Length: 180
Image (cartoon, rainbow, N blue to C red; front, side, top):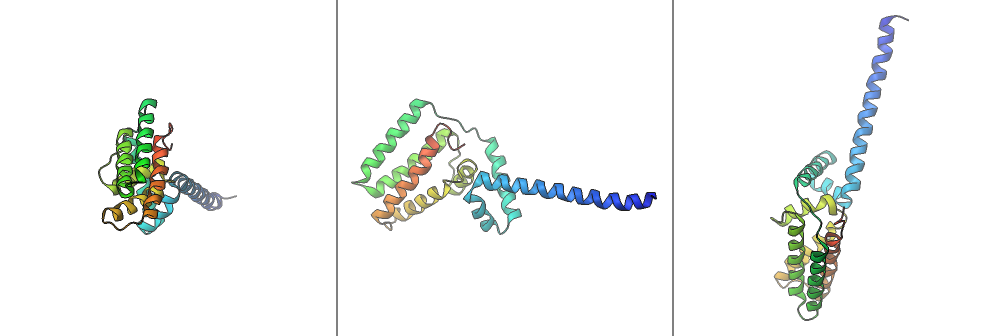
C-alpha cells in the first residue's frame, strides 16, 4: 500500500477519534454540571439563552466557590441555630410576617457563618447553587414571599409555605455535610 493511501486512511480515522473524544469529554462535563446543579442547570440554560453560555456561567460559579472557605459548624453552634429556628417557628403563630423575615435573617446569618458571602440576593443564589442547587428553589420561593410580605402582599398560607421553604435550605445548611 502506498504512503499516500495510508495517510488518506489514517488522517480521517484520527480526526474521527479526536472528534469522538472531544464529544465524550463535553458530554461528561455537561453531565457533571447537570448532577452538580440539579434544577439550577435548566434554569441557567434558560436565563443565559443557551447551553454553552449557561455552562460557562456554571463553571464560573464553581471556580468562585472553590475560593470560598466554606466550613462546618461545631456541634454547639449547630444546636444554637436549631434552637433559634425553633423560636422563630414558635413566633409564627402570633406574628407570621415577622417570623418569615426572621427566618430569612437566620438563614443569611447561617450562610455567613458557614463562609458564604451574603452581599446581595443574586450573589447568594449563585454561591449557594454549587452545593445547594437542589434546594435553591425553596430559597427563591421563600424570598419571593418575604419580599411581598414586607409590602403586606402575602397571605398567611403563603407565609406558612415560605417557612417550609426556608426550613429546607436551613436544614441543609445546618447539617454536618452542609449539602455536600
